[in-house]
Length: 222
Length: 251
Image (cartoon, rainbow over all chains, first blue to last red; front, top):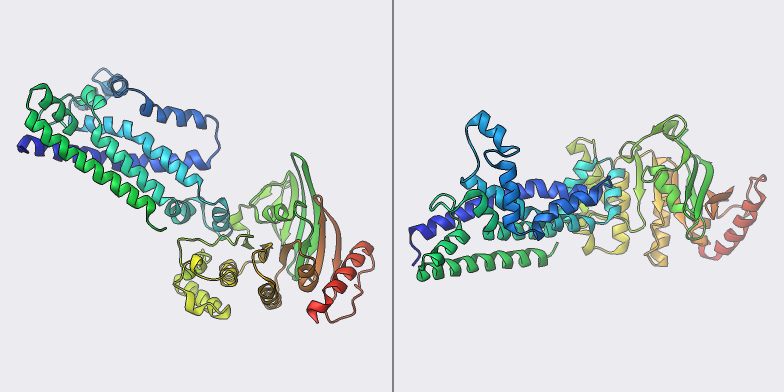
């Protein structure tokens, strides 16, 4: 039942989700830090803006991404002019779609985790001569790491499950942009129930494993 | 001669702070009830809070001068700070906590100093323990060691003994006095405990409702109980009373 196309889809999904999660961590952790530690004008507005993909239908997110990255898009047009390359209908587009929908999970959870770190510990670090960056790396982030890891796992799970925005931006090209959820959709649409069955079971197992890992991380001792 | 001169003024909703005092290389106690602005004063000296106006000079080095536009960040003030809840890093071992206080010191020297301090404070066998795995008194000593590793030019302590029982308080108070004599730097201790103030202090600064109302020289516990500084009658009366009070515990 798990034929070549299923494994290809699985490999693609894992690759897309892994890269998207790495990017999400790279952007989301500093963003969560700044949102929790710095008071600046428009802070809650920015928070709301990055959280928006959490509540918008993925097709709407995908539509915005087309406006931004499409061949005639705000960023897509100049990119296409200079390089002759467009992100549309490539596996990288699936990464972009997954990144945008998974980012709020990382920002929300890391902001909450960083806010719970005792402010006095940071003051102690400052009086001991350490800069804010060093304090963040040695004190804040290590103490918030369980929440941050849980956020990363949630982001990974969300990236794995991404469907709507991926379909809009990357299409459903077998072997190239057809991730697990798209492959499942194609299998059902084509009446290949056995294939769909196997894919669904595999996907459920991987998601359950990810959630188990997240729980384990949040419960283990500091 | 190293000393610490502090003058701070700030207005907060429902609370005004206006203090001005100067201490030498001695153990000074900021004494007063909770909410008198003692902790806030320490935080402002350390640069963790900003006053509306003020000037802080430590060993002739200007740390803060709002009129002159000087406001060094806490990192550059070279102040050892022991927090009320000690603020030990729970994810680091005892040794790592102490080493963390050695910013800017070469690694071998930092380790050597940390070992010396741990030895000195009777913590030698506990290096690999986490703060959660040692006793309150031991945690206190770790906080001292961490604050002292960089050899700060002032040591500030914000009610560090609150969580301890009486015998431990006495031990650690004694250790603190000993350290002050050794380092010869200004040590400022915040407390609302009369006995602690009387037993430990060379100088007592009384804080009430955001003002440093009195300052007086405390006599050695063994010496004549009447303070020498005649200009500050209120302080004298206060100290006389507290010293009397504390006598049985001291003697």
